Amino acid sequence: MRWRFSLTTLVLPLSLPLICHAQVGSADQPERLAKLFVDAVNSKSVERRVALLHPKSQACVNAQTQPYYDWIFSRQLKYVIPEKYKVATKPLAGKGPLPSDGKSDYPLRPSHQLQIDFDAGPYSAISIVMLIVRDGGRWYEVLPCPRPDAIAGMRAIEAKRAEQERKVKSLVAKLADPLRAEIIALARQGRRIDAIKRYQDASGESLTTAKDVVDLLVPR
Image (cartoon, rainbow, N blue to C red; front, side, top):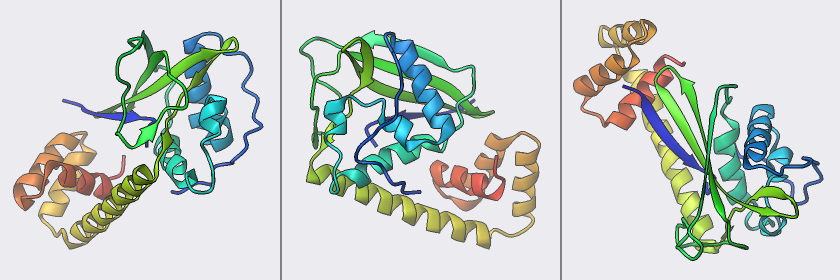
């Protein structure tokens, strides 16, 4: 059993440059865009990440929307994508609805979906989905322009995340032996799922919280 998380590009605050000067060169194939994305993530370069956006998406970045884009990129830049990642591309229906939270507007219509899959550890796999379009001989990512309610929603999610982090830290601090020692031993033996289930059974907490507790107690 492995944990799988889906991470779309529609979501450590970072400072996102309002004007990007990074040169990414020719990207005439979707796979080339995927490679540039992986390089940007692994280099932890916000500037290189922004350079992959279509100019019309870049134009949406301003003082009001920058925290929204910081939030999106910070979730991606925390990863280290291994060399053996998988790329899949498929066209979007010409006039069909686009993935949306109903609170953002696309500055132009993307034509394809690009998905990058990779393993983030022995028990987790990540899927990153990008909406892309070919323009001027190269491929770009198309991110929607957030409206004020989208930014408010992002801040609410971050507040909930911070509350969860505080809860997990408190649970770890209160976790005593022999349960603490048992969970640590299971995780270090490569039985992380068993450790998570053991804590969940003993504490009555949700599966998500149990996983967060084990991850904090025994970092990968």
